[in-house]
Amino acid sequence: MDNMKMNRVPLQPTIRQAYTSKQVTTPKQSFLQHLHEATVKTELKVSKHANQRLIDRNIHISEAQWQMINDKVAEARSKGVKDSLVLTDQAALIVSAKNATVITAMDRTEANNQLFTNIDGTIVLN
Image 1 (tube, rainbow, N blue to C red):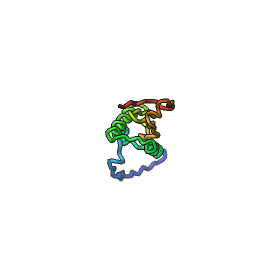
Image 2: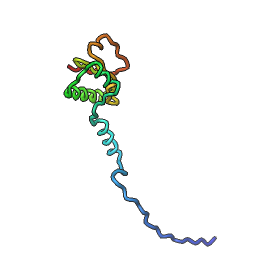
Image 3: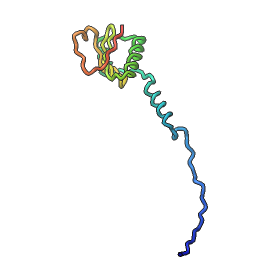
Image 4: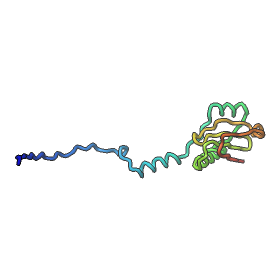
């Protein structure tokens, strides 16, 4: 038989880098973070086009009504609505619930004989 020599190599401790809490995310933490981001109320934005329509058509919406619209759009988004028609006593708004943005606005009387397409939810407020 061949003579075989075995040299023993001492194990050296592995140098580990310190982990910060941001570097280590467990699946549970990640899910909770995503859930929180998805359910946090986002403030409704008004597009430049919609803002101009509101001004041109002399449509005034009170702060309380904007808050109610914001809440209902957030509720619609949580139920899977992407684009919605929001009807108030004086205005009809097309809102992207997905992006929390008012896309366009028209006076309620102007909206009476209109056909609205590409919406998957309607919010009626009075």
